[in-house]
Image (tube, rainbow, N blue to C red; front, side, top):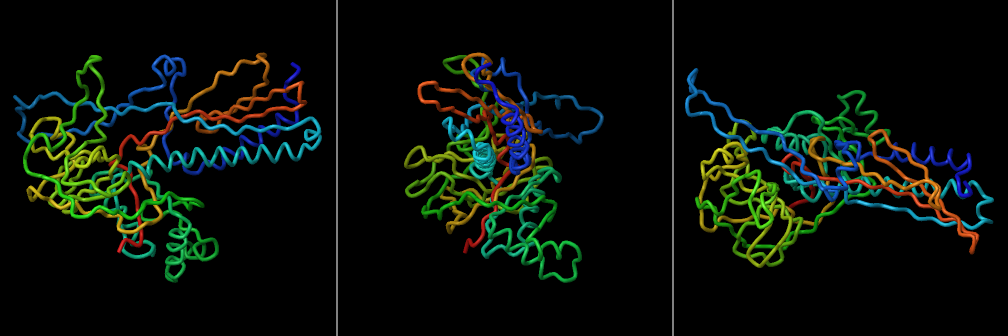
Length: 421
């Protein structure tokens, strides 16, 4: 082929792909679900992924007459919708410098790896509903222990837990470890390399960039948490609308509050009298349930995650997926915003709660452009294409990624923020 890749270009692409794979730190902390690309295209690149069942038991003995009830299977929509491209151009003279071409490939690798990592972190930072505000600066084990506590109390699996920390917060923890002279091994790596490693059941990672949360400006807002069915969410698998029976996304709920002035998406909050419960046992944790604001639809409504499932309606679905309990009912239950100061967001999650769905570009060979493809260990495909323009004697190169990232379970992910006095 006239535009085919040279042997050197193929070697460079393999090196780029290898380096790209090594740079995918955040994405390797997420689950990957592979799909049939033909089916995805026919479905508009959207599919519904089933959530894990949460079941209850009955202690009435051998006879279970009347206890056999339907169970509600929830699902979450996910799509292959994230597209990232690095376009490059070189003229016939520049191509004499093979080193320059290689450097451009390395730059493309770095950019695309960053894009994928950022998308994974955004899914956790935006939708993670477990919020741990720390009044002081990062200090070490005690901070991560609070993150472990909120996950344990609410029944999140105690393995494959990931915590990503901004550089300043990570180094603050490493400093704390380096001062603990009674702990061998880890102290040395903390002192020499500012490395924390496995801490309080979490694999910890240092970020060279991190999302930030702004200081909440809302004040004096309230929510009516009295027993009225319309105020609390009842999980359901499907709903009938004008287009027929459709799946329902149960990760969110729009609630009515007294006022939303100065409230923005991303704010974290608690509601007086509403405590979190353990996902399996449904026991009250004694701790207020934390929520994240996803959108502000009006002056008196907020879209939050997770929904308030208090089982006050006593339906089977509510009992199955109950995530909180209302201990004190009030017409004016106070909303308290947890992000008191602007700060770096340190996201954490259970690995299976963040999911990547790889996509694929079917670029035909022999259609005026040369194509190279390669996949990472996770199955995420990078495509490199090249095309020569005889009018200008310039060659266009492009590196492409296509995938989707979804936070399947906001109650299995969250954020740790410091300096929240």
